[in-house]
Amino acid sequence: MTVRIRVRPMLLALPLILTGCSSLSNMSWPDISWSGMNPLNWFGSSLTVSDKGVGGITSSTPLTETAVKDALDGDYTLRSGMSMSDGKMLSFYQAMDGKDVKMSISGEPKGNVQRVDVVDPKVESEWGVKIGTPFSTLYSKAFDVCVKGEGDDAENVECKAPQSAHVTYVFSGIWHGPDSLMPSDDALKDWKVSKIIWRANPANNAQ
Image 1 (cartoon, rainbow, N blue to C red):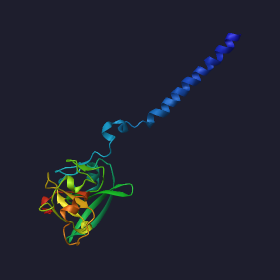
Image 2 (image 1 turned 30 degrees about the vertical axis):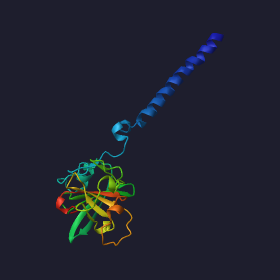
Image 3 (image 1 turned 60 degrees about the vertical axis):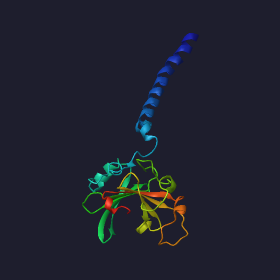
Image 4 (image 1 turned 180 degrees about the vertical axis):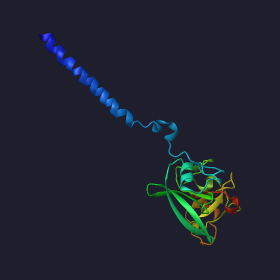
């Protein structure tokens, strides 16, 4: 009798234990994110700025929501708008991460992408330049390489990337001289990249 009393509860408990393990297993597997386990995704965005474009965006990418979203691998939500530049109507999409604008993709309405402005710290150029890169790591002088910024970048300086006619870097920093003058090289050395611009037409780059 004693043996039966001890064994029977164990036999009754065994199915419950197995059922519990089965339930835990069923609860755990759906929560696993296989993409999150991919080492390529551990370091944030994989998008880069190159001579050809930004991520999958190139000069042949139509300026449509579907085309732009696919070219950016769906990493952002898009917000559309219209603006004027030099008397021309432009269409643009802002790539959003929550409430923050990380990128602006623009061009003529119903045309292809002509320009991409990148302010996302996770996106860098294929040459290793990213938001926050100091001027002094890329240039020793601004002459023949940089110009004063325009529009929203009027207080900044825009410089041609050494490796590409399609890419420019916008630098921001402190300058105590006249707004109409280019900051001195000594002042610029501490300025940092605040924006990376890719243009389909190099003729529109900083001269």
